[in-house]
Amino acid sequence: LLAAYDERGVEVSFDEVVATAAAVGWPIVRRMTFKSVTELIAVARALPQTEEGFVLRFANGLRLKVKGDEYKRIHALISGLTPLNMWEAMAAGNDLQAIRRDLPEEFWPDFDAIIACLEAELAALIKTNRFLSRGGTVSILC
Image (tube, rainbow, N blue to C red; front, side):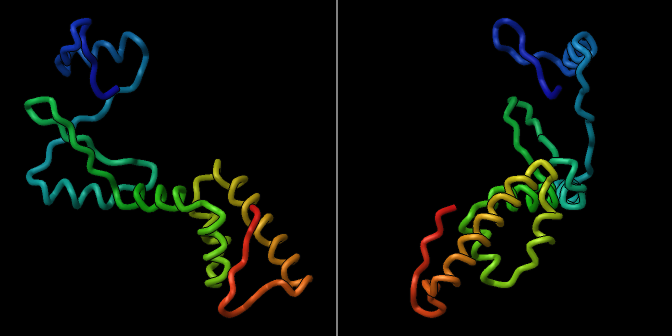
């Protein structure tokens, strides 16, 4: 739990957030202090992929997220899990299994389905000589 609001929509104190989390059995965010923004960013950059980052709360209630490099990298991979991006990875000779390993496990079935479809389309194009290696376009139906 990061925050809580009363019935008027006013944010409650952190102590009340702790009490609310305990009452409903939810975990509470850790509060951390940094000496500088530079230190905060250095720590965020080094976070493992299992930790998203930090939420900075300013006195006026405004919040700002600072996400870790690994978290951003993994989410870029997830966002890039499209037939077009995987086709481009195949065409570039990228290591598809390395891409798959970097994805969270719950996305492996999607990855496998996209790659299987692309490989089947490619095999069909090659078999029928409709694959143009230079200057042409190929429509993929995945």
